[in-house]
Length: 152
Image (cartoon, rainbow, N blue to C red):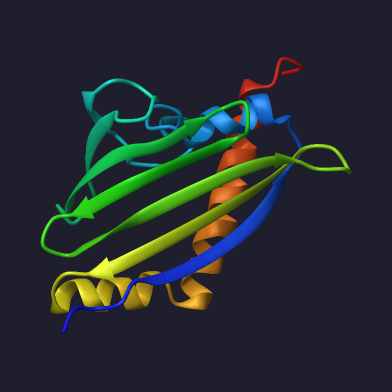
């Protein structure tokens, strides 16, 4: 029997307009805030159908395909395949906040492909781990925005 997909979603707020926040969640944009993020562009750029490859510090190769790219709506989605481990979707939504700034929602939906993948997916989507990761994303993206801010 195949493994069911598992999902985790968290949100955070950034004190910058969506037009500044949204590009941080593209293959190239993540370079500004994600240590070790070095995508190899395989096709296109940001648009739907573009593809890229990453490799983590443990040598795990992941192929990513942009499935949705809508900067006007602040939405980008990716299909990803961590070879031999897991497959899944990543959805990022950036929405303007009534209080100013941008609310960012990040949802991962992953399916294990192996026992190693099952262990990874279980740990990655565990509530405390995922919340900590998203809090790290908030801090790193806020720092990147502070560096790129025209007032600095």
